[in-house]
Length: 184
Image (tube, rainbow, N blue to C red):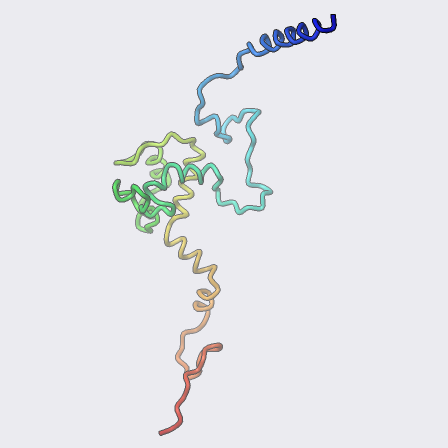
């Protein structure tokens, strides 16, 4: 009798598993971009992301923004937005770092171009929060802004700005004096 109990137990377990697996999942709708938009009506299962307490500088950029830039923009605009991506010359991609371009376009116009496309640039169906952060990233690419940031953070540049410009027969501190020849 003990030999018949083992196959019977396996049969009952298999029947129970087959009935348990027949339940259909509650949510089988197609994936939408708004499923990952944490800023408006998040699901209880979504994680809220906040910059508070992370210790990271709050530049308004996150991994989603960086990935969106890399996947949608760098092939034409390049990693620094200079229009030097692999397809940039082919599609005549704009140099987004040019100060003239930066001053000639509004944030709303940049967002509209991302949403609707322009010329050979396709439209991108991205959440509003991602588009707003892409606009912030594009604003950070401004060459004038980068040069000001680099100039202000560079110790030699700030020392050069602070040092008075005057002519003197004495060499600057730390500079080697030119060797002098013995009189002829």
